[in-house]
Image 1 (cartoon, one colour):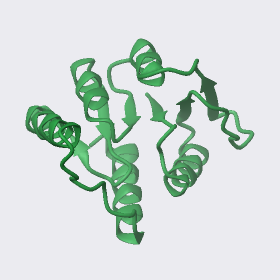
Image 2 (cartoon, helix red, strand yellow):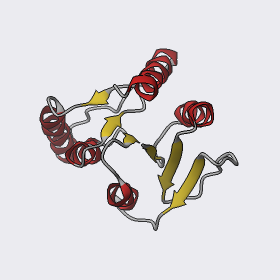
Image 3 (cartoon, one colour):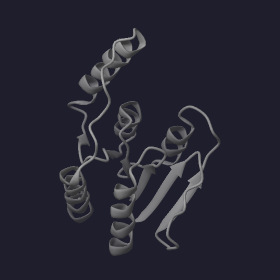
Image 4 (cartoon, rainbow, N blue to C red):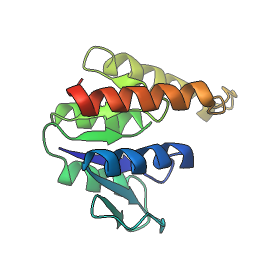
Length: 148
C-alpha cells in the first residue's frame, strides 16, 4: 500500500501530517504535482513532478494507483476514479469518499460549477481549521492501523 497525494492544492499542514505518518509507519508517500515541492529526505517520501496542464497530476496518480492504495485529494472526479480503481480516497479535511456518496458529490460539484459558470457566486470552501486537521490526522492514523 502506498499513499498518493494530489499535492498541488494540498495544504502544508496536511503534508506535514503525512510526512510524520510515513516516517512513523514506513508507508511510502508520493506527492505528485506540476510544480516543484521540497519534501523531506526520507526513504519513505518521494516527489513526482509532472508537466503543467489540467489534470496531469491526477492522470499520473491514476496510472500508478494499485488496489488498496490511499489517495489524498479534494478533487471529487479524481476520488471517483480512485474508488473505481480499487483505491481509497481521503480529503485534506478528513472526509472519506465512498462508493455510496461519490455520485451525489459529483452531481453537486457539477451543479455548483454550472452556477459559477453562469456568474452566480457560490463561494469557496471555508478556511481549514484545527478541527479539520485533527479529523484528517485521526482518520489517516485509523486507516494506517486498521485499513479502514
